[in-house]
Length: 117
Length: 116
Image (cartoon, rainbow over all chains, first blue to last red; front, side, top):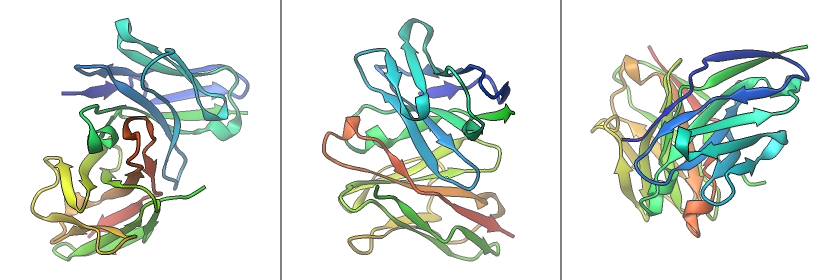
């Protein structure tokens, strides 16, 4: 069964500092990987996704993530954090059995990001 | 940009009552989903829906739950007899069918269901 682990429940960084949010996954085949962000009272917004090809993927809002198959990881990074990045971040792995399975995501626990001015 | 819209944003109901959560997926999308997030827990898959039938459902999605696409625009989740443990944020999501593996899942803002 597929699973996703986000080891850090809560991370605090200063504005302008770099950020790395960790994500480890377990999946029996080539994974489809995603990072979503959720601001308070909002839905889940897709930051970036990995399906195949280049293992370093660029997303919106200056985020990037690197897929490392050997480490079963898909860590999210941003070189300089802005106060508006404060939110909860979810890593997810998707199915690849065709049809609706592509939208059947298994989420991690989430990491709450606090940004200090 | 088109959005998935969910109504209401917050619903309070008494235990044992029926609730219907409503969603309007993006108009040209073909795959529909419900997820839920109990406070402090992971976002969990409930059910997927395509071509007017359930494609897959999780263990959570028992006989108390049902989904329906009553017309060309709405997608509903019904909980027949709510329990306290059904209190959660429920997210609707939709996905375009063409090249579905490479298209993102679009989520609504959620309906917070509180069962008292």
